[in-house]
Image 1 (cartoon, rainbow, N blue to C red):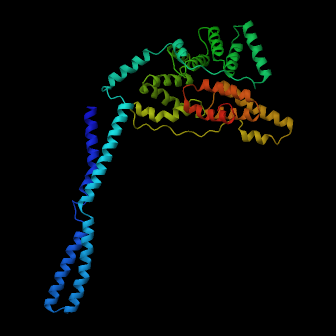
Image 2 (cartoon, one colour; image 1 turned 135 degrees about the vertical axis):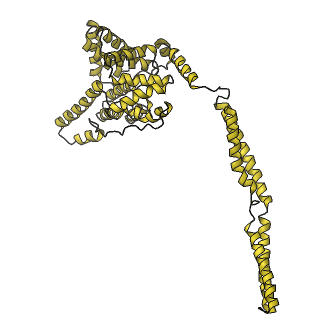
Image 3 (cartoon, rainbow, N blue to C red; image 1 turned 180 degrees about the horizontal axis):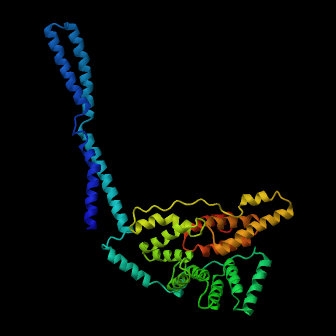
Length: 409
C-alpha cells in the first residue's frame, strides 16, 4: 500500500510539473498569430476603402507598406514562438525531474527503511511494551554509558575541599546521620563524584527506614539516570514510583516518569503527566521549560491535535545576575563583599533545596564566575547536569553560561 500511494503521488506531481512545459504554447495561439490576422484584415479593409473611393491610391500604397512591415515583424515573432523551442525545454525539464526523483528514491533506500512493514496501532503498542520490558538493567546501562570525564579540581577552593574531606570523615564515623549523608550527597555531586554521591544517597534512603523522603528518592533516581547515560532503567523507575507512593504530587518524579514513557515510545502516557505538571506550575520550576518546549509535539504524537498549552505566567528570577554584582562593586569593600556573598548564597541555597529554572542555574554560574569562584561554578555546572539529565533544552542556557565562564569549550 505504501508503494502504491507513493507511486501515485509521484505520478501526479510529475504530471503537474511537466504538463504546462510540454503544452508550451500549443494550447493557445501566440500573440503574434492574432496580430497577423489583424494586419491581414487591415489590408483587406484598405482594398475595400480604395474601391469605394474613400482613400486615394497613394494613401492606399502607403498604408499597404506600413501594414506589410508589421506583418513581417509579426511573422518573425511567430517563428520564434514555434512549439519546437517549448519541446526542447520540455525535454530538459523532464530529464531534471527524473534525476530529482531518482535521487530522492536512492536517498530513501540509503536513509529510510524500504522493507519495513505497515505497523498498525496495536503492533506499535506491542513494540513499545516490548521495549519497556527489555530495557537494560542499571548495571548494563552503566557499562554501556560513555565514561564521565574527571572533574578538574586544580582551581577548587582548598578550604572547601578540606571541609568535604572532614564531612566524609564525619559521615564515616557516624554513617547513620541523615543530615551528614544529605550534605555529603550534595557535595559529592558538586565534585562530580557521581558514584560516591550515589553511594551516600543509597545510605541516606536506608537510614530513613520505611518512609524515606520522596525528594531523596528522586535524587537517587536522578543519579542513577545520570550514571546510565540518561536512560531510565527499571531500578531507577522503582525509586520514582516509590517516591510517588509516598508523595503523589512529587513533581520531579512525575516529570522523569514522563521522560521514561517517551523513551519507550508511549507519548500517549507521557502527555497527561506533563500536561498536568505544566498546568500546576510554577513557571519558575526547573521542569517547566523542557515541558513547554516539547508539549505541543508530544500532544500531536499522542493523537491530540487541538491542544493549546496554557500561556506562561511571567515571573521574575530571584537572585543576582552579573549586572547586579557589577553594581554592587560601587559599594565600600566590606559592604560590597557582604552583599554579593549574601545574594549568591541565597540563590545557591534555594536552588539546592527547592530547585529552580535553568535560567536561574545559569545565573548562579555567571555570578560565581564574576566572583572568581571558578571551582564553585564548575561544581554547580556538574550538579545541573545531574538535575537536568535527559533534557537538552533545559541544559542549553546552563551550558551557555558554563561556556561563557570558561568551564566548557
